[in-house]
Length: 561
Image (tube, rainbow, N blue to C red):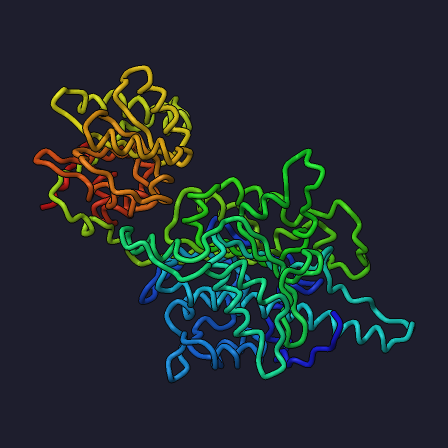
């Protein structure tokens, strides 16, 4: 850093940053086996029983200050945001999340929507900025003390990491990263002397190209998600000095790294790559995964790969002053001090596994809606909706075998057999996993020549041909993947029946395909088991889901008129 910082940081005794990230911050032992579950007006909150937040009832700007948020940031928050009412009260999402995020617990928030996305990005910008500016302020203050000592006896402060970056933020598309960075501009800069380096380049790279024209033939959720710059390959370094923001900084000169999972995976590389680099992730203290429901449709392995290479001791000596590196980093405990923030529209098995694997010593919090109403009200056509439960797992059967081989056997013998008659036509089969898609496709290659396929790897020409042949009745079965639906949202013609190989991850995939069926015998069939509870609940709702999972009957029908 090249200048002094005179920002007032408030009372250090009440600063969560100092409590959590000083070199002497104690390593706590969260009781992962015990939880407390509570409910407020909107959410169920499930947290580990170890660390209490100093003030849970955060309703106003003054309450936020009790967490040691920099006054300059709070002033900017109050003057630039629409998240507070005229009386200064926080909106419900900020009210629910701020205490947990600002106390550096791991947070899994499972109610991210397009309506609250701006509020979440603003909250994330506030937390990220407060963290890096507090870090910077601490280092500058200690530098000044060392300079004044003029070589005299003084305790060397333990205030640094192996590398400079402290916050890693993952976003699925450039358009979301663009929104976040603009939130940073609003909070970080005030007055007339504000400076942003490389802003023009940033707007060209991350802003929308030309006039934004939504595709009105697609659903509203699709338009909102993909409108603007939806490129998923990017990385961006950000550095902060007094009243200035520097963009496109080298990672090792950055305070915050903004990236997509694919862009970061390209930098991290794989075993054996000569140009791979991940030392810049060695001292990350806050990491955020924003819109995980999209990451699941991109490549979840990139998320896991990133975590595996975060908070590892550097491979190269990059001019590290080890005398000032925090003790808990030297001891290899960086991952236990790292805060992990996970935002998603819903909870999945993958998210549960990811979140449960974090080791934040301050504990964790899961915040999700009070109830799940389902999306059956979105079915607008008369159709018989059949839900068929697989046999329970046998005592000597592994879970993997049950979820793969047993599902395939149930599909081919119990479900597909109902549609083999000559009077059945135009059947769409939706398969969420590409690995299962390949297995089913190979089955159709052996057993039936009358099929087509639509996947994320299909060429435009093959997509056009498959859709045309199916619409004209030349092929009986059309196999497709959930990822293909997510990125294309095509409306198919001449659909009489839809089979869901398993409940889709995204509930809109169910309504999208169900609303395409037509004809007097129109039907849909969902093959499910007791491990599909969270996915099934998003479709039929919490109450009906319990019936489907626990009933002695294995087949249930819901008729929409």
